[in-house]
Length: 446
Ligand SMILES: NC(=O)c1ccc[n+]([C@@H]2O[C@H](COP(=O)([O-])OP(=O)(O)OC[C@H]3O[C@@H](n4cnc5c(N)ncnc54)[C@H](O)[C@@H]3O)[C@@H](O)[C@H]2O)c1
Image (tube, rainbow, N blue to C red; front, side, top):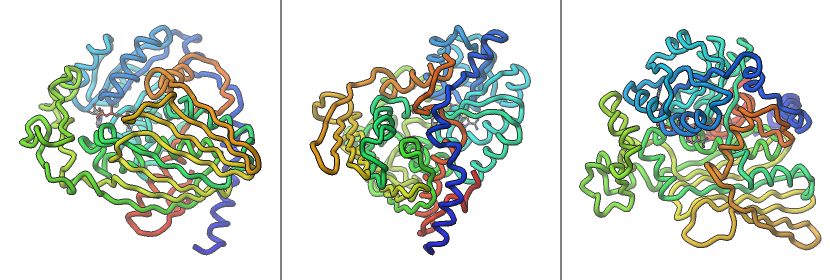
């Protein structure tokens, strides 16, 4: 790549970086939801996408824990059976819809929560803003560069606001890493090694459903890595400039012999190590299997389906606007789950190993090691944070719905963070497909 191009790209991003800089992030965050509730009663929430995430964290949990400041005014899903089941599961009395525009017109919500399949996020985020609503969306912001541009432009045009729910920012280890890097203990970060491992349970689950198809999930480089790339962007106060990637499908999809349509009817039930019996889980049967007649969504589909077109083995290199170099990998067929991250700084190195699930005993949730260039190493362990995503889910929802609260670490994420994060994954996908490095700014103007 010619040096002028790199320098040019870097300079253009440096200008934009001001808004994301630490100083801006340290401003107190005034919670719009609470302000509304104080003004005119409860915040009116409509939700689209009543699957496992929409019915749980953003459905029942939200209604049960924050019912004093918000009320559900509408639920929407393209599957009428699922949305009706979820209404009763949540214990709410609001109407249900299969038509999004009709829901907004009839219920007039303040905020729309988007928890559909990833590839439909952009459609509902943009439509909600056009119809006058602010948006809370699950990650990833969207799945390709065109959708990303559309979201950025629509937010600007409508003056509405998008919040992206990056719950990993609120986990105890991620928070501690941010604090340590902000403290300057290891100096200015020059490069990072980040390896993420998904196991044969959680990792395999992505190949059983829509996530296994680029057209729906953007690949795991978007669907899953958006969490990791957001953490990196946030930890580093960095904006990605150039991305180079490689990817392969080495285990799932066409690689397996035990092929069948789905676990429930499979002839390899007794021998396949991935056999998963959905019939043993009443909630999953109600949420998915009993709703199949309406949309044919099979939740326990075979992870050896020949058409699966995402990668399970991925390596990505990123150059940031502030000259940090990143080496990242994601492997989704591992015997254990968690990550290793190492930050090389001008004054020393920070190593962190976070454990999510492994067949051996560990004392806490994450081990930290800080080693100055000249001096003794310091180690400590972070204990487990209780609750969903290591306590991150609840902390994030408190931040959104119980304010105003200060945000000294800049954990609140909007469309810019959402876009910068998915654009590493989208660029990595394009890099693999086109077999060349990609410049983020050639794909989208953020
Ligand atoms: N932040 C996290 O840790 C986390 C965890 C899990 C899921 N998620 C995100 O939450 C979202 C939902 O994931 P899930 O696991 O609940 O998936 P799911 O398959 O269980 O649910 C998706 C729902 O969207 C509905 N849907 C699909 N297309 C639609 C359309 N065009 N219009 C209306 N409804 C439509 C489906 O019928 C289904 O009910 C995804 O974007 C996923 O990335 C985030």
